[in-house]
Image (cartoon, rainbow, N blue to C red; front, side, top):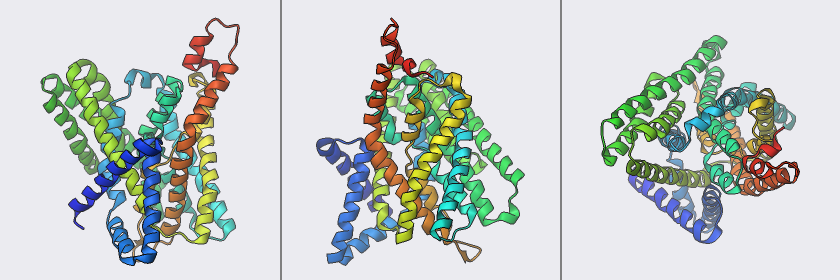
Length: 440
Protein backbone atom coordinates (compact mmCIF):
# COMPACT_ATOMS: atom_id res chain seq x y z
CA UNK A 1 0.00 0.00 0.00
CA UNK A 2 1.44 3.36 -1.04
CA UNK A 3 1.62 6.37 1.29
CA UNK A 4 -1.18 8.06 -0.66
CA UNK A 5 -3.42 5.00 -0.38
CA UNK A 6 -2.66 4.73 3.32
CA UNK A 7 -3.46 8.41 3.95
CA UNK A 8 -6.66 8.13 1.92
CA UNK A 9 -7.73 5.04 3.89
CA UNK A 10 -7.19 6.81 7.21
CA UNK A 11 -9.18 9.87 6.13
CA UNK A 12 -12.04 7.68 4.87
CA UNK A 13 -12.11 5.73 8.15
CA UNK A 14 -11.98 8.95 10.19
CA UNK A 15 -14.90 10.43 8.20
CA UNK A 16 -16.91 7.21 8.46
CA UNK A 17 -16.36 6.88 12.20
CA UNK A 18 -17.24 10.53 12.82
CA UNK A 19 -20.42 10.08 10.77
CA UNK A 20 -21.44 6.90 12.62
CA UNK A 21 -20.73 8.56 15.95
CA UNK A 22 -22.77 11.65 15.11
CA UNK A 23 -25.82 9.78 13.78
CA UNK A 24 -25.80 6.73 16.06
CA UNK A 25 -23.51 6.69 19.10
CA UNK A 26 -23.59 10.44 19.86
CA UNK A 27 -20.54 10.15 22.09
CA UNK A 28 -17.88 12.86 22.47
CA UNK A 29 -15.98 12.82 19.14
CA UNK A 30 -12.65 11.52 20.44
CA UNK A 31 -14.35 8.83 22.53
CA UNK A 32 -16.67 7.72 19.73
CA UNK A 33 -13.98 7.60 17.03
CA UNK A 34 -11.54 5.64 19.18
CA UNK A 35 -14.26 3.24 20.38
CA UNK A 36 -15.24 2.50 16.78
CA UNK A 37 -11.58 2.06 15.79
CA UNK A 38 -11.03 -0.37 18.67
CA UNK A 39 -14.17 -2.28 17.68
CA UNK A 40 -12.88 -2.43 14.10
CA UNK A 41 -9.55 -3.77 15.35
CA UNK A 42 -11.35 -6.45 17.35
CA UNK A 43 -13.49 -7.37 14.34
CA UNK A 44 -10.40 -7.60 12.12
CA UNK A 45 -8.73 -9.79 14.70
CA UNK A 46 -11.71 -12.15 14.74
CA UNK A 47 -11.87 -12.11 10.95
CA UNK A 48 -8.20 -13.04 10.87
CA UNK A 49 -9.07 -16.30 12.58
CA UNK A 50 -11.18 -17.24 9.54
CA UNK A 51 -9.40 -15.36 6.76
CA UNK A 52 -5.78 -14.86 7.93
CA UNK A 53 -4.81 -12.82 4.86
CA UNK A 54 -7.15 -9.96 5.72
CA UNK A 55 -5.83 -9.46 9.22
CA UNK A 56 -2.22 -9.75 8.13
CA UNK A 57 -2.61 -7.11 5.41
CA UNK A 58 -4.18 -4.64 7.82
CA UNK A 59 -1.49 -5.31 10.43
CA UNK A 60 1.21 -4.73 7.83
CA UNK A 61 -0.39 -1.45 6.76
CA UNK A 62 -0.77 -0.21 10.35
CA UNK A 63 2.74 -1.39 11.22
CA UNK A 64 4.12 0.64 8.31
CA UNK A 65 2.82 3.85 9.92
CA UNK A 66 5.41 5.56 12.09
CA UNK A 67 2.94 7.13 14.53
CA UNK A 68 5.71 8.73 16.54
CA UNK A 69 7.15 10.47 13.49
CA UNK A 70 3.73 11.38 12.08
CA UNK A 71 2.51 12.95 15.32
CA UNK A 72 5.63 14.42 16.88
CA UNK A 73 7.05 15.86 13.65
CA UNK A 74 3.91 16.51 11.65
CA UNK A 75 0.46 16.61 13.19
CA UNK A 76 1.35 17.95 16.64
CA UNK A 77 2.36 21.44 15.51
CA UNK A 78 -0.91 21.93 13.62
CA UNK A 79 -3.01 20.54 16.50
CA UNK A 80 -1.39 22.78 19.12
CA UNK A 81 -1.55 25.88 16.92
CA UNK A 82 -5.23 25.22 16.15
CA UNK A 83 -5.99 24.94 19.86
CA UNK A 84 -3.97 28.01 20.83
CA UNK A 85 -5.56 30.46 18.37
CA UNK A 86 -8.93 29.91 20.06
CA UNK A 87 -7.66 30.91 23.52
CA UNK A 88 -8.09 34.42 24.80
CA UNK A 89 -4.61 35.57 25.79
CA UNK A 90 -5.98 37.99 28.37
CA UNK A 91 -7.87 35.20 30.13
CA UNK A 92 -4.81 32.96 29.98
CA UNK A 93 -2.61 35.74 31.37
CA UNK A 94 -4.87 35.91 34.41
CA UNK A 95 -4.00 32.25 35.08
CA UNK A 96 -0.36 32.51 34.00
CA UNK A 97 1.22 31.29 37.22
CA UNK A 98 -1.17 28.37 37.59
CA UNK A 99 -0.65 27.27 33.98
CA UNK A 100 3.14 27.76 34.13
CA UNK A 101 3.59 25.83 37.37
CA UNK A 102 1.26 22.99 36.35
CA UNK A 103 2.94 22.65 32.95
CA UNK A 104 6.46 22.58 34.41
CA UNK A 105 6.62 21.65 38.09
CA UNK A 106 3.48 19.54 37.71
CA UNK A 107 5.03 17.47 34.91
CA UNK A 108 8.23 16.95 36.92
CA UNK A 109 6.27 15.89 40.02
CA UNK A 110 4.11 13.52 38.00
CA UNK A 111 7.17 12.02 36.28
CA UNK A 112 8.88 11.37 39.61
CA UNK A 113 5.80 9.91 41.34
CA UNK A 114 4.89 7.62 38.43
CA UNK A 115 8.50 6.52 38.01
CA UNK A 116 8.86 5.52 41.66
CA UNK A 117 5.48 3.81 41.96
CA UNK A 118 5.76 1.92 38.66
CA UNK A 119 9.25 0.75 39.59
CA UNK A 120 7.87 -0.58 42.88
CA UNK A 121 4.92 -2.20 41.09
CA UNK A 122 7.07 -3.96 38.50
CA UNK A 123 9.48 -5.13 41.19
CA UNK A 124 6.62 -6.69 43.15
CA UNK A 125 5.27 -8.36 39.98
CA UNK A 126 8.71 -9.73 39.20
CA UNK A 127 8.97 -7.95 35.83
CA UNK A 128 12.62 -7.01 35.17
CA UNK A 129 13.09 -3.35 34.28
CA UNK A 130 15.83 -0.78 34.68
CA UNK A 131 14.64 2.01 37.03
CA UNK A 132 15.44 4.81 34.57
CA UNK A 133 12.88 3.42 32.11
CA UNK A 134 10.19 3.72 34.79
CA UNK A 135 10.92 7.45 34.88
CA UNK A 136 10.91 7.53 31.07
CA UNK A 137 7.40 6.10 31.28
CA UNK A 138 6.49 8.74 33.85
CA UNK A 139 7.64 11.48 31.48
CA UNK A 140 5.76 10.19 28.43
CA UNK A 141 2.48 9.53 30.27
CA UNK A 142 2.40 12.81 32.25
CA UNK A 143 1.38 15.28 29.46
CA UNK A 144 -2.37 15.70 29.12
CA UNK A 145 -4.45 16.08 25.97
CA UNK A 146 -6.99 18.94 25.78
CA UNK A 147 -8.64 17.68 22.58
CA UNK A 148 -10.82 14.95 23.99
CA UNK A 149 -12.10 16.81 27.03
CA UNK A 150 -12.47 20.49 26.03
CA UNK A 151 -15.82 20.17 24.26
CA UNK A 152 -17.17 18.02 27.10
CA UNK A 153 -16.19 20.58 29.73
CA UNK A 154 -17.77 23.42 27.76
CA UNK A 155 -21.07 21.53 27.47
CA UNK A 156 -20.93 20.75 31.18
CA UNK A 157 -20.72 24.46 31.98
CA UNK A 158 -17.59 24.44 34.13
CA UNK A 159 -16.26 27.81 35.31
CA UNK A 160 -14.37 29.68 32.58
CA UNK A 161 -11.29 29.96 34.79
CA UNK A 162 -11.12 26.19 35.13
CA UNK A 163 -11.54 25.67 31.37
CA UNK A 164 -8.74 28.14 30.60
CA UNK A 165 -6.48 26.45 33.17
CA UNK A 166 -7.04 22.96 31.74
CA UNK A 167 -6.52 24.00 28.13
CA UNK A 168 -3.57 26.31 28.83
CA UNK A 169 -1.79 23.66 30.86
CA UNK A 170 -2.38 21.00 28.21
CA UNK A 171 -1.00 23.20 25.43
CA UNK A 172 2.32 23.69 27.20
CA UNK A 173 2.82 20.50 29.21
CA UNK A 174 3.03 18.57 25.93
CA UNK A 175 6.24 20.39 25.06
CA UNK A 176 7.64 20.17 28.59
CA UNK A 177 6.82 16.46 28.78
CA UNK A 178 8.59 15.80 25.47
CA UNK A 179 11.69 17.67 26.66
CA UNK A 180 11.78 15.69 29.93
CA UNK A 181 11.20 12.45 28.03
CA UNK A 182 14.08 13.12 25.62
CA UNK A 183 16.39 14.04 28.49
CA UNK A 184 15.62 10.87 30.46
CA UNK A 185 15.83 8.74 27.32
CA UNK A 186 19.25 10.23 26.57
CA UNK A 187 20.37 9.34 30.09
CA UNK A 188 18.96 5.81 29.70
CA UNK A 189 20.70 5.16 26.39
CA UNK A 190 23.98 7.05 26.98
CA UNK A 191 24.42 7.58 30.72
CA UNK A 192 28.18 8.21 30.44
CA UNK A 193 27.55 11.11 28.04
CA UNK A 194 24.69 12.74 29.90
CA UNK A 195 25.04 14.69 33.13
CA UNK A 196 22.57 16.51 35.34
CA UNK A 197 23.80 19.96 34.33
CA UNK A 198 23.70 19.06 30.65
CA UNK A 199 20.11 17.89 31.03
CA UNK A 200 19.15 21.05 32.94
CA UNK A 201 20.71 23.15 30.17
CA UNK A 202 18.88 21.15 27.51
CA UNK A 203 15.59 21.62 29.36
CA UNK A 204 16.09 25.38 29.64
CA UNK A 205 17.19 25.75 26.00
CA UNK A 206 14.28 23.69 24.65
CA UNK A 207 11.58 25.28 26.82
CA UNK A 208 12.70 28.92 26.95
CA UNK A 209 13.96 28.75 23.37
CA UNK A 210 10.61 27.36 22.25
CA UNK A 211 8.74 30.26 23.84
CA UNK A 212 11.15 32.82 22.35
CA UNK A 213 11.00 31.23 18.91
CA UNK A 214 7.19 31.08 19.02
CA UNK A 215 6.97 34.73 20.02
CA UNK A 216 9.37 35.77 17.25
CA UNK A 217 7.61 33.72 14.59
CA UNK A 218 4.15 34.79 15.69
CA UNK A 219 5.19 38.45 15.80
CA UNK A 220 6.77 38.27 12.32
CA UNK A 221 3.62 36.77 10.79
CA UNK A 222 1.47 39.25 12.71
CA UNK A 223 3.40 42.14 11.11
CA UNK A 224 2.88 40.55 7.69
CA UNK A 225 -0.84 40.13 8.34
CA UNK A 226 -1.15 43.85 9.07
CA UNK A 227 0.09 44.65 5.58
CA UNK A 228 -2.43 42.56 3.62
CA UNK A 229 -6.22 42.34 3.44
CA UNK A 230 -6.82 39.06 1.61
CA UNK A 231 -8.05 36.18 3.70
CA UNK A 232 -6.58 33.52 1.37
CA UNK A 233 -3.11 35.04 1.75
CA UNK A 234 -3.56 35.55 5.49
CA UNK A 235 -4.62 31.96 6.12
CA UNK A 236 -1.78 30.71 3.91
CA UNK A 237 0.65 32.70 6.06
CA UNK A 238 -0.58 30.88 9.17
CA UNK A 239 -0.04 27.55 7.38
CA UNK A 240 3.51 28.61 6.57
CA UNK A 241 4.09 29.68 10.17
CA UNK A 242 3.16 26.23 11.48
CA UNK A 243 4.78 24.07 8.79
CA UNK A 244 7.96 26.11 8.45
CA UNK A 245 8.15 27.16 12.08
CA UNK A 246 7.85 23.65 13.48
CA UNK A 247 10.51 22.37 11.07
CA UNK A 248 12.91 25.22 11.84
CA UNK A 249 12.36 24.79 15.58
CA UNK A 250 13.46 21.16 15.23
CA UNK A 251 16.56 22.28 13.35
CA UNK A 252 17.41 24.77 16.11
CA UNK A 253 16.75 22.11 18.76
CA UNK A 254 14.14 24.17 20.56
CA UNK A 255 10.73 22.80 21.49
CA UNK A 256 8.49 22.84 18.42
CA UNK A 257 5.31 22.11 20.43
CA UNK A 258 5.96 25.00 22.82
CA UNK A 259 6.86 27.28 19.90
CA UNK A 260 3.64 26.51 18.00
CA UNK A 261 1.47 26.92 21.10
CA UNK A 262 3.09 30.31 21.76
CA UNK A 263 2.78 31.41 18.12
CA UNK A 264 -0.87 30.38 18.13
CA UNK A 265 -1.54 32.57 21.16
CA UNK A 266 0.08 35.56 19.41
CA UNK A 267 -1.95 35.09 16.21
CA UNK A 268 -5.17 34.23 18.04
CA UNK A 269 -5.07 37.27 20.31
CA UNK A 270 -2.92 40.11 18.95
CA UNK A 271 -3.39 39.46 15.23
CA UNK A 272 -7.12 38.82 15.63
CA UNK A 273 -7.56 42.12 17.43
CA UNK A 274 -5.28 44.34 15.33
CA UNK A 275 -4.54 42.74 11.97
CA UNK A 276 -7.45 40.56 10.85
CA UNK A 277 -10.75 41.74 9.46
CA UNK A 278 -13.98 40.21 10.74
CA UNK A 279 -14.31 38.09 7.60
CA UNK A 280 -10.72 36.83 7.85
CA UNK A 281 -11.18 36.05 11.53
CA UNK A 282 -14.23 33.89 10.81
CA UNK A 283 -12.53 32.13 7.92
CA UNK A 284 -9.39 31.56 9.98
CA UNK A 285 -11.41 29.95 12.76
CA UNK A 286 -13.35 27.79 10.31
CA UNK A 287 -10.28 26.54 8.45
CA UNK A 288 -8.23 25.77 11.56
CA UNK A 289 -11.16 24.15 13.33
CA UNK A 290 -11.57 21.85 10.31
CA UNK A 291 -7.84 21.04 10.33
CA UNK A 292 -7.98 20.36 14.06
CA UNK A 293 -11.04 18.08 13.80
CA UNK A 294 -9.63 16.18 10.81
CA UNK A 295 -6.19 15.57 12.31
CA UNK A 296 -7.61 14.51 15.65
CA UNK A 297 -10.11 12.14 14.00
CA UNK A 298 -7.23 10.53 12.07
CA UNK A 299 -5.13 10.39 15.23
CA UNK A 300 -7.80 8.57 17.24
CA UNK A 301 -8.37 6.16 14.35
CA UNK A 302 -4.64 5.39 14.44
CA UNK A 303 -4.74 4.89 18.21
CA UNK A 304 -7.61 2.45 17.88
CA UNK A 305 -5.96 0.48 15.06
CA UNK A 306 -2.56 0.46 16.77
CA UNK A 307 -3.74 -2.35 19.06
CA UNK A 308 -3.44 -4.69 16.07
CA UNK A 309 0.36 -4.47 16.10
CA UNK A 310 0.97 -4.33 19.85
CA UNK A 311 1.73 -7.47 21.81
CA UNK A 312 0.35 -7.93 25.31
CA UNK A 313 1.41 -10.74 27.64
CA UNK A 314 -0.45 -11.72 30.78
CA UNK A 315 1.78 -9.89 33.24
CA UNK A 316 2.01 -6.85 30.99
CA UNK A 317 -1.79 -6.57 31.04
CA UNK A 318 -1.81 -6.79 34.85
CA UNK A 319 0.92 -4.16 35.10
CA UNK A 320 -0.97 -1.92 32.66
CA UNK A 321 -4.21 -2.14 34.63
CA UNK A 322 -2.41 -1.38 37.90
CA UNK A 323 -0.67 1.56 36.23
CA UNK A 324 -4.04 3.29 35.76
CA UNK A 325 -4.55 4.18 39.46
CA UNK A 326 -0.86 5.09 39.68
CA UNK A 327 -1.24 7.59 36.82
CA UNK A 328 -4.38 9.06 38.40
CA UNK A 329 -2.75 9.33 41.84
CA UNK A 330 0.30 11.02 40.34
CA UNK A 331 -1.94 13.44 38.43
CA UNK A 332 -3.79 14.32 41.65
CA UNK A 333 -0.53 14.91 43.53
CA UNK A 334 0.98 16.96 40.70
CA UNK A 335 -2.13 19.17 40.66
CA UNK A 336 -2.79 19.38 44.40
CA UNK A 337 0.69 20.46 45.46
CA UNK A 338 1.00 23.41 43.04
CA UNK A 339 -2.60 24.44 43.75
CA UNK A 340 -1.86 24.46 47.50
CA UNK A 341 0.96 26.91 46.84
CA UNK A 342 -1.08 29.00 44.36
CA UNK A 343 -4.17 29.14 46.52
CA UNK A 344 -4.96 32.73 45.53
CA UNK A 345 -5.30 31.72 41.91
CA UNK A 346 -7.46 28.67 42.68
CA UNK A 347 -10.80 29.49 41.00
CA UNK A 348 -12.92 26.71 42.46
CA UNK A 349 -12.81 23.82 44.89
CA UNK A 350 -13.77 21.48 42.08
CA UNK A 351 -10.75 22.57 40.01
CA UNK A 352 -8.42 19.92 41.47
CA UNK A 353 -10.94 17.16 40.78
CA UNK A 354 -11.60 18.44 37.26
CA UNK A 355 -7.89 18.81 36.50
CA UNK A 356 -7.25 15.30 37.83
CA UNK A 357 -10.07 13.40 36.13
CA UNK A 358 -10.08 15.69 33.09
CA UNK A 359 -6.35 15.29 32.51
CA UNK A 360 -6.76 12.81 29.68
CA UNK A 361 -3.76 11.10 28.13
CA UNK A 362 -3.80 10.81 24.35
CA UNK A 363 -1.80 10.25 21.21
CA UNK A 364 1.36 12.01 22.37
CA UNK A 365 1.96 9.37 25.04
CA UNK A 366 1.58 6.51 22.55
CA UNK A 367 3.74 8.30 19.97
CA UNK A 368 6.53 8.81 22.52
CA UNK A 369 6.34 5.16 23.59
CA UNK A 370 6.53 4.03 19.96
CA UNK A 371 9.56 6.29 19.43
CA UNK A 372 11.58 4.34 22.00
CA UNK A 373 14.53 2.56 20.36
CA UNK A 374 14.31 -1.20 19.95
CA UNK A 375 18.06 -1.50 20.49
CA UNK A 376 20.94 0.67 21.64
CA UNK A 377 24.50 0.03 20.44
CA UNK A 378 23.49 -3.38 19.21
CA UNK A 379 21.85 -4.33 22.51
CA UNK A 380 18.05 -4.89 22.64
CA UNK A 381 15.83 -2.67 24.79
CA UNK A 382 13.37 -5.13 26.33
CA UNK A 383 11.58 -2.33 28.19
CA UNK A 384 10.04 -0.99 24.96
CA UNK A 385 7.34 -3.68 24.76
CA UNK A 386 6.56 -3.24 28.45
CA UNK A 387 6.28 0.55 28.25
CA UNK A 388 4.08 0.28 25.14
CA UNK A 389 1.70 -2.04 26.98
CA UNK A 390 1.56 0.26 30.04
CA UNK A 391 1.08 3.37 27.90
CA UNK A 392 -1.64 1.95 25.69
CA UNK A 393 -3.63 0.60 28.65
CA UNK A 394 -3.54 3.96 30.45
CA UNK A 395 -4.43 5.90 27.28
CA UNK A 396 -7.38 3.65 26.36
CA UNK A 397 -8.77 3.91 29.91
CA UNK A 398 -8.22 7.65 29.91
CA UNK A 399 -10.04 8.33 26.65
CA UNK A 400 -12.89 5.82 26.96
CA UNK A 401 -13.63 5.85 30.71
CA UNK A 402 -12.51 9.31 31.82
CA UNK A 403 -13.72 10.85 28.56
CA UNK A 404 -17.19 9.35 28.96
CA UNK A 405 -17.58 10.30 32.62
CA UNK A 406 -15.95 13.73 32.92
CA UNK A 407 -19.06 15.50 31.60
CA UNK A 408 -21.55 13.99 34.11
CA UNK A 409 -19.03 14.35 36.93
CA UNK A 410 -18.39 18.01 36.07
CA UNK A 411 -22.15 18.71 36.12
CA UNK A 412 -22.53 16.82 39.41
CA UNK A 413 -19.72 18.79 41.03
CA UNK A 414 -21.27 22.03 39.73
CA UNK A 415 -24.62 21.09 41.30
CA UNK A 416 -22.92 20.25 44.58
CA UNK A 417 -21.24 23.66 44.48
CA UNK A 418 -24.63 25.33 43.98
CA UNK A 419 -26.10 23.41 46.90
CA UNK A 420 -23.23 24.51 49.12
CA UNK A 421 -23.47 28.17 48.13
CA UNK A 422 -24.60 30.66 50.80
CA UNK A 423 -28.38 31.01 50.30
CA UNK A 424 -28.48 34.37 51.97
CA UNK A 425 -25.92 35.92 49.67
CA UNK A 426 -27.67 38.12 47.07
CA UNK A 427 -24.76 37.44 44.73
CA UNK A 428 -25.49 33.67 44.69
CA UNK A 429 -26.56 33.48 41.01
CA UNK A 430 -23.43 35.31 39.88
CA UNK A 431 -21.27 33.21 42.19
CA UNK A 432 -22.76 29.99 40.81
CA UNK A 433 -22.10 31.17 37.28
CA UNK A 434 -18.47 32.04 37.95
CA UNK A 435 -17.64 29.09 40.17
CA UNK A 436 -16.69 31.33 43.10
CA UNK A 437 -19.16 29.53 45.37
CA UNK A 438 -16.72 26.59 45.55
CA UNK A 439 -13.75 28.80 46.29
CA UNK A 440 -11.71 27.48 49.16
